Image 1 (cartoon, rainbow, N blue to C red):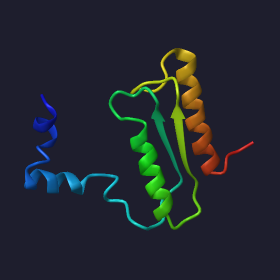
Image 2 (tube, rainbow, N blue to C red):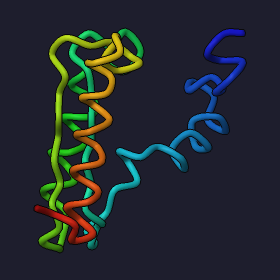
Image 3 (cartoon, helix red, strand yellow):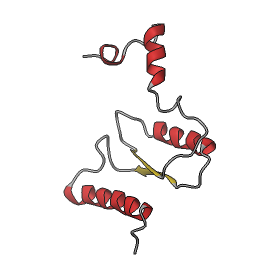
Image 4 (cartoon, rainbow, N blue to C red):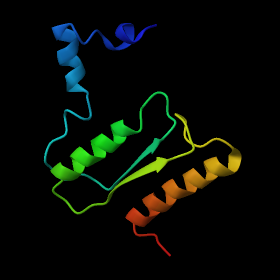
Length: 107
């Protein structure tokens, strides 16, 4: 199945208009956002690292709150994040530390 079969052809107005309704970048607006940890990997072949970086940069210009908005780029991982048992566990621990810090469970 190709991209057009799955998502539609953006050169067709109906498909393009529909795509815009679920695009997280073009639907950003000035408002309060929850605390967010946005993660990317430098070697991701599916979502290039600059896409989440651009998303976070735009969100930072629009957000009206003081909640943290962090961007973490793993310089040695691909689309699925870090591979290997210990590298993967390190990523999970980082995620848990962020979440626990937001709910007030810190040491």
